[in-house]
Image 1 (cartoon, protein in one colour):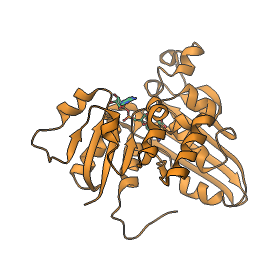
Image 2 (tube, protein in one colour):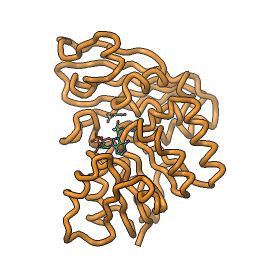
Image 3 (cartoon, helix red, strand yellow):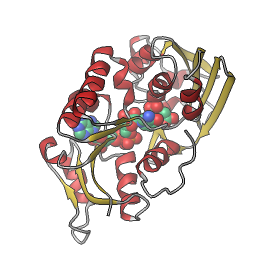
Image 4 (cartoon, protein in one colour):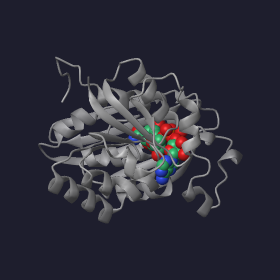
Length: 271
Ligand SMILES: NC(=O)C1=CN([C@@H]2O[C@H](COP(=O)(O)OP(=O)(O)OC[C@H]3O[C@@H](n4cnc5c(N)ncnc54)[C@H](O)[C@@H]3O)[C@@H](O)[C@H]2O)C=CC1
Ligand SMILES: O=C([O-])CC(=O)C(=O)O
């Protein structure tokens, strides 16, 4: 039967999630979907589709569910995350970069503690959060992420605009940003949410270092993680194919959200 699931944001990830529910990879008793462009949801829901898939026109009508998957953007996390938890829903957040804001992060964590709800942060487009979280049970010395994307995977990011960088003019692989996960998530809100996910698994947003490289000849979104600690070293690299409908979003991020929502596993693998 499954839980009642709310989808906040009906773009690349939201749509694929609905497909997985329809194909029963993810089980859900009811699906409620809210997007700031409600027509896009309504026109995609076939009138012949089961009555348990409902397009809603307001946030208030979304949260009549057990769990909300946010796949909308950092603005939506700022606007709705606390209210989702207060409404008694668990939260899966893809735009986790919003939690670079310490005040919001603390508010979300405190609200989850008070309400007894859980905030889930999918691994998204990166690998190794299981091992890094486990390694955190002892001392971690350093956690870093190097992300290489084709220009159209980062174009339009506020950091590039404010530094006068036109990624379409770059002719060879070029580092366009170096800084903390906090600065990365703020400067590249639609491109590097993975940095915040990594930081929450490891040493926190301020101590996690991030480098972003624009590669004019690259086709893939490549995320390299390097961790050192008392357990030794961890290195992971994922060479992601972008999603067909959004070059900024790697296909693995979509699959990760789907995997997190599966509740049919008798054997749980990984920490
Ligand atoms: N954690 C991770 O590994 C990854 C996270 N992401 C993030 O996940 C989010 C979703 O990604 P996609 O599906 O590719 O994006 P998308 O751009 O394809 O779809 C986003 C949808 O959300 C809607 N939306 C935006 N703001 C809204 C609001 N305030 N209220 C209601 N609806 C709103 C838009 O109208 C759009 O339909 C993005 O923030 C993206 O940066 C993407 C890839 C990896
Ligand atoms: O999909 C990716 O490669 C990573 C991404 O956009 C994000 O973390 O926001």
